[in-house]
Length: 180
Image (cartoon, rainbow, N blue to C red; front, side, top):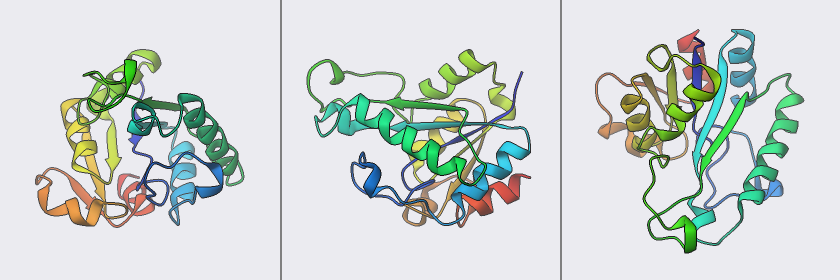
């Protein structure tokens, strides 16, 4: 089985912007591309797991999310970095149509991590979830892995609410350096 590092997207890899879906609005948090390159070089799978309630709310489509992820892939390639898998939850209980349903993929539930484990033969107990919200940390804990909160995005505000087993780092690059 493989070890993976699960990464939240908004506020962890990129600067937090409400309902980000357009490539021209995307900005890496400084050091994020380097952090992902270091994970790649260490032989760890990099899996992004992101809640995208903007789909359920009708702000953008699943195709828009996929297009943004392809843009991020191209930008990461400039730093000799890559994401091995992108998973997102388009659901929200307050959403519209078929997306307005309870699901097991929306963080803090561990569904996306469990799905990635099934698809890519990942050992969740030897993997890590890094994010800027309690929902990220709770998903990682529910999946049985280690957790790291970053202070970027919403992380500085969330820090007082994470448990003692969660490592806290300033940003993704610091988190990755602490792992390696």
